[in-house]
Image (tube, rainbow over all chains, first blue to last red):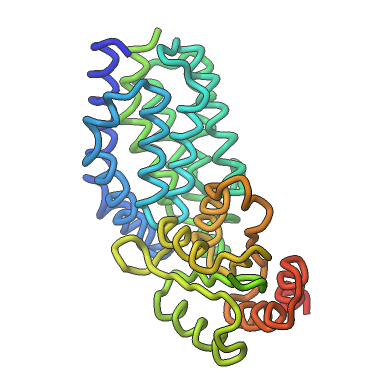
Length: 203
Length: 130
């Protein structure tokens, strides 16, 4: 990994972690409406664990760094979102080369989304984080820049409001899940928004 | 090491996990390897891959380990812990699709009687079908 890549990776991960941690109360409130109300605290615990080890993580080559960060989330989040986001990062790390091009990233992101689908036995349309990740991947594949990616993530999270949850804790509520944004979709939006700058580094 | 199938109980609540384990012990005594865990890494409601890994080690038996879970995150975190098992344990740690309390008691009773891992899980899963 070159010095520039190292700084950018560390910066991006720090921005993602800071954004997730700053949204703790918002994610908790969303989850309290249609879930068990722990999503904000769980995500904060996981990303704090990543931040604590960030210098050591960022010193690793990109594929290993992503896998290490993903494993921290798996071990520390304490809810289903740990294995789900952990799998996203670990699968990215497994698929990405050390110095990825934009095309490499699109391929790896697609593979990582497939891994999340398998882990959660889920797909887009069930009112989950996948309802943000899938449209963001489509936008990225279609050539979106950072600004367009943020817009796509925001639209996608908003689009979960009228959805009926058929996977995750919100599915227990049946039709009462309609009218609320999915907390996992919102955390995915926050992560994509903070990480969108990556597209400015990769060409 | 016991030749009987080990039982692991994974609940979001440490109290539910402990209470379920007590009910299992009442049925089968100390002869079935049994471990339980509950709570997120900070001890609040939730589940922890780290704790599940430790519970699998504690209840490990050459006959395998059957895991009983309560809600979604317990299952997802248990699946993660199963994937992280060493190659020689793969296929010998499984999640039973059964209600946690009744399933754990039923599975442990089968294990106590000398049943295989498939039979132990099958007996617990019949509860869901009924």
